[in-house]
Length: 335
Ligand SMILES: [Ca+2]
Ligand SMILES: [Ca+2]
Ligand SMILES: [Ca+2]
Ligand SMILES: [Ca+2]
Image (cartoon, rainbow, N blue to C red; front, top):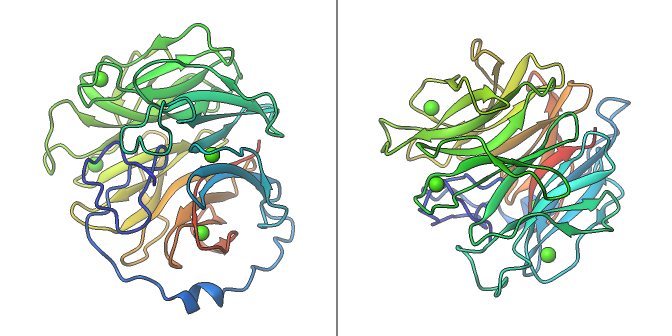
């Protein structure tokens, strides 16, 4: 089951949200899609050259989560991990040769530890070989993101156990770990600006209680200085994803007490916020950009269980990539 670290209410209606994509509070039950609706879906037409390439994601099938690759038209599914533990949150190195991810494989009881699994950070080659552990702490590491120069991987972890996540960076060989945020706010799910100068993340102010202290998208310089808030609204704003040209940040937000989550995009300075999806009762989340910046890949439960989709960056031309009965999450487009 996926775990949400933001929201303790794990009464998920769906097969819950997990390790990474998982900041997803879904407190309100919503109508379940019928099996007939799921099985009657036909594959999308070819992409005609728009948004080609490969997408990494993870899927929760029988028992635990594994990391997969597929073409950006949904074909050529390839499994990269194969074990009895949960493998989450794949993200590409800038040269596409490696994938960072999180896993509870080194938790003493990976099949029964939920919701307090000790996830650590790992890297592997893009064919699944050479899997290597980078962190070894009693706290969980989540939401990795690779810096544009390939030299560092960001992640979040609540090492002091006060409920607030902190943003860290580490070298891809596991050395040079450095903490960037001060722990006065619950900082999660960082993403780097394409020039490597800034890091966006989502955060609830320290000690804040909804609705007065909802989650906002923040940004800081890559050394942790110059923190400022980009969004300022009464919605929970999650999981920023910087566009390849650096001008836009995609994210998703959620109305308090609702199971509805919609994808949004704003200018990188926080201005000009636009909603990209608007599906009643459904969860659209975890946006990531195609390398050419023309499309956004995401996950949604609009067709019954979580599937991977992508759409034009203006929200049009939505295409579904996966068609199965398990949860598909956390897509990342190969650079
Ligand atoms: Ca696994
Ligand atoms: Ca903390
Ligand atoms: Ca907000
Ligand atoms: Ca699915």
